[in-house]
Length: 302
Image 1: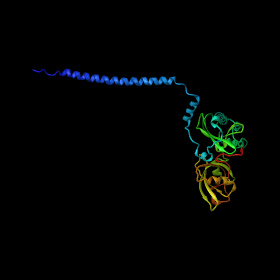
Image 2: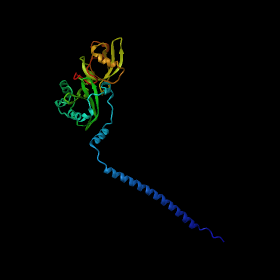
Image 3: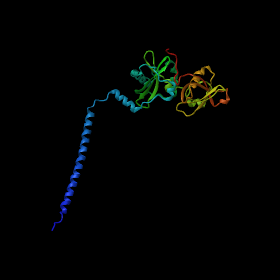
Image 4: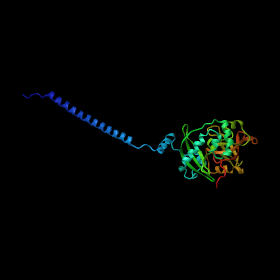
């Protein structure tokens, strides 16, 4: 008689095979973990042995965290073409940065004027401005983008200044004949003879210097007038402004308009409310244009 199969022995063999298979899987997993640990440990030791970052690299990394690389704001691009102005401006970063530290860190008007363009003309404007606005010395930590700007008779540049606290700002600087670098304070703070709110409420009849952002609205060849919309940076209130296209003193403004339709262009204008033309009682008249963008230029070098 044939003996029956040994079922218990067969079951034990299957369990043993499963155990071997599980052990192989576990061994493979452990091997992978060990390999990863070895690679990670080697990488950490490599980092510890790496040479320290150079100061100039650390400064570049700091600037990248503070403010991404950016192009010049659109209005300034329209007013100031990015062409050679300050020769080898990148090599002059230390001198420019030192001048900007003195300019922004000044605690008196006279200290600030030492590093300002056209100090004799700007002195009364600066005193007037700081009677109406608080004084805030700032600590400069670095420069960002430095761009040269071509302008006949001037060596100008457009630089981005980084502060220990607060947002970066862009400044027009000029290299003087003695090598000194000076900031254009007027365009930086957009100095106007009146605050925008006061101008709107008081409606001065006297021509008043205002730094505005302008957009072309329409031209009326039949009347000889061109119309703009003007506003002050940071304000929503918009004014309609007109000028006589036949006026000789306004030909530079007309030439800019003839380059094509434009929007949000910085201008330095003299404007006033007109008593003579009641039909334009809610509009202002443009009497003169005194700057290129927000920059007032004087003849320096040919």
